[in-house]
Amino acid sequence: QVQLAESGGGLVQAGGSLRLSCAASGVSSSAMGWFRQAPGKEREIVAAITWSAGMKYYADFVKGRFNISRDFVKKTIYLQMNSLLPEDTAVYYCAPAVPMPDGRSWSHRADFSSWGQGTQVTVSS
Image (cartoon, rainbow, N blue to C red; front, side, top):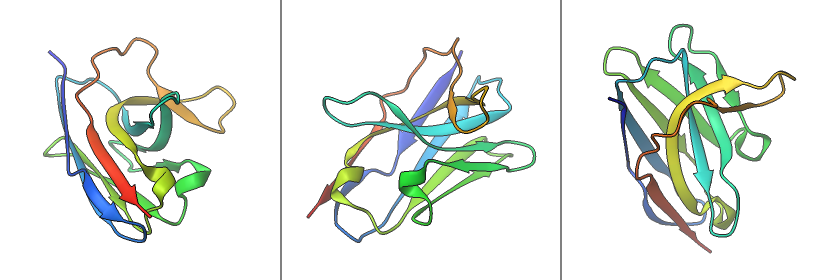
């Protein structure tokens, strides 16, 4: 049974930092990603990482500000978010991730539907 438990969100002022965690169990995937969904917007990829080699992908809007990492033994991924902006306000989720065919982006696996509760990140201006 797939279980994803996101934590670490909160309210922070612009320019501040947060560290999100995602404990994954029952997930068979070579990579995991962080996704976010703001009110009225579609869910979007933020970052992804492969379990074995630790290869990373970042969406352009977080490059240089966020860092994704993983603990293979604990089956946990992290998202260190620095220099937060009000537009980073969203619910953040983790999920199994796969690269898109064009090689430019990543997305969640098409067969994945067991989204967790997510963790709310609110950045005040």
